[in-house]
Length: 250
Ligand code: PEP
Image 1 (cartoon, rainbow, N blue to C red):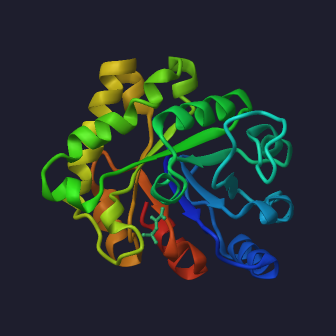
Image 2 (tube, rainbow, N blue to C red):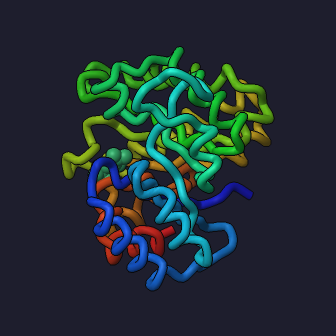
């Protein structure tokens, strides 16, 4: 049975002490409700070692927001999957729309990042989603199909470590959410594509999260849809009460 997951992307928010305070608050209030439901936080790099310690006796999992395409070497300022593994990171975002837009990440680069992650025992959380103009012109299925091509470069065994996050770019940080029906339509499409590539059993076992202005008030409706297995949360992940209310909607 596939896992139900809520993952919180802190982005470039929280200084060190604020990040520690948020982690402590989460650890003290989080109650794992079911062995099939998982809570993941994705702090900035500088928090990871200390947050890992705070989470060590909790059931909250640790992830990162990015990694480099190579394992080691002369890449000043970068962080490799191998380094992330060494501090206890078990999940990592790949292809978040902010990185695609601001750092021009393309499929080629994202393929390398996925390979680095799976080779270092880290589960990629692969983000895909269309721009507002793609939605308006009705080309969103093609856009997502093209983005998913990154995942077809993995072996079936490596793909089975991937979590997919559908994040329509027009809904990220805008307060505008895809309706539950819009989310379901794309999640079903993604699951069908996975099935075409790796078979129906793998498709049924893959968690597909929705991301884009998810909050306590819309989480229940979104998570009720059969192909929506949880959420990737930005803004609301910075507030323990909201973040845990979203988790409790799983
Ligand atoms: C995100 O950045 O992945 C995200 C979903 O952000 P928000 O929840 O703030 O829209």
